[in-house]
Image (cartoon, rainbow, N blue to C red; front, side, top):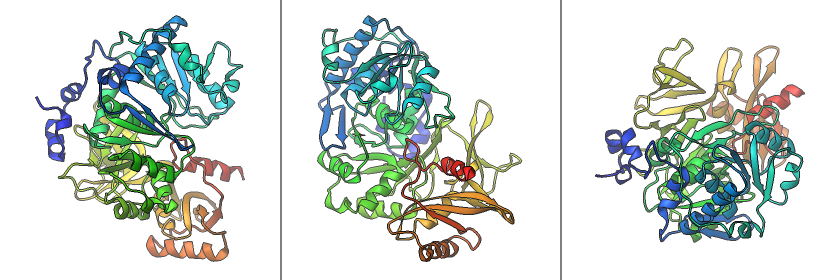
Length: 514
């Protein structure tokens, strides 16, 4: 019987994708299911590597499925010897590396709950999360270990040269005993330490639903060599960038350390990756590096998520890689719901669009009264779940052909003198100026208009009155006479979430603090 991975077309996705067909991609069932087994152990013997980690320092770390199965089993046995029990939380605060994956999969293999944490968290950020999830154990590096030293009840293990020796005496196989609905992972979103988001809790069976995004959002298929440079402490880097491709037995690339566009280009060339999924920021950095022409590539599929891709970067990707960038859209609450089906021969990727719904999901655009908006009219994106419409808190519109478009977060809307404006559209216009590298737009209070647009601009050149006038005239010309930024601040950097998205919320808070 054919599997969903055997089908490539958009039409086949609509015809054949069912819950039963998704479950058929895995070994386990509802009674016996373990995420680590599905991602690692069942692929033992594979001739291709499991993971290739491109380190910012310049070296590559290649890890086989056999090695990962052996070492994660040893870590699972070591946890049991430490008194860790099923359901206990095991945190890991490491860059992508052998130790990170051994800890992540070993914890889930023995029934503990893995808690990946962003490596740039300071003492307050770490403390809040460790205390919130009541972690029993933290695996981290020597640099970060001291900031966890005072956390009561937390065992801290440093993943240094002695980590492998610590695990070596333990057995190299582990029998998993979890059920599909057992808890596998807690994941924290990219909030600040002052507003700690509630941990998103994932069961082992979460990987089954995730395959909708894998098959139709990133276009994963057997034989792909797949790279995702996003941090595995964030949902995209972990679920779409690590777990989904490994569940299909693919060779998966990861990036460790401070991102450098040329380092990524070299990894894509050296290891012949054919499929990449990244944040829009990564692609912009590749364009601005002007290094792409110096490297060969083997890419056949290219996707992005997290925030809209500006027009100039989309054009660059088409010109250099010969590929239209495929958008994938979702939220923490509803998962991935809109995709662009990369690799489907009968689906035309439409530049600027979020795509169309994944098989079996209903998405609509509603106005403030709950009525369906006509094509071209901006409203809130809504998803049908459990016999009710669930708000995404994102604005969007649909065109006559059924493609959805993003119009910003609901709180990114700027209302000035009665006009409703999208920060996303304003930023896209500003980015068309050749001197602009990055831009963010917010609404700031104005006695006459209620709000006016203020832009924060990272430019190649020093800010000046002349540059301000050029940017304002550009937005007036390309977007609208009333939507230009009346105020512009030139900055050395823009605040970003751990996922690489520009954090307008921080900009609004800073502005309010003035």
